[in-house]
Image (tube, rainbow, N blue to C red):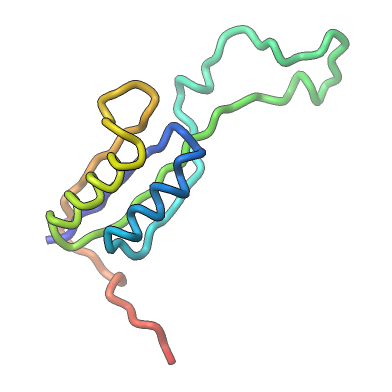
Amino acid sequence: MSYLVWLVIDDLDKCNDVLQAWEDAGTRGITILESTGIGRIRKGIRDDIPLMPSLTDLLKRPETHHRTIFSVVKEEEDVNKLHEATKSVIGDLDEPNTGVMFVIQLHSVYGINKRKRE
């Protein structure tokens, strides 16, 4: 059975360390996406607009980004390794402003057992 492991990282500064920890745990084929949650978009009053704003200033939307990383692994043991690797960098994911990790069991997976062509 294969698993899809998703991790949304709140602290961008920890992304590279998490990626390294996942690689050290034996994970290959990690995909990284920029992402933003709805709570971060729906901020209240903007305090970044100058006293005499231009149209560009008004149209700029400050957004705090996250990184969403995911990978497909083959064994439940690999999922546990990724969870431990993540905790070693980020800490307890039940704490605020750390991130969210979830795992989906996959019925079928195609195209991940590729070898480099020589």
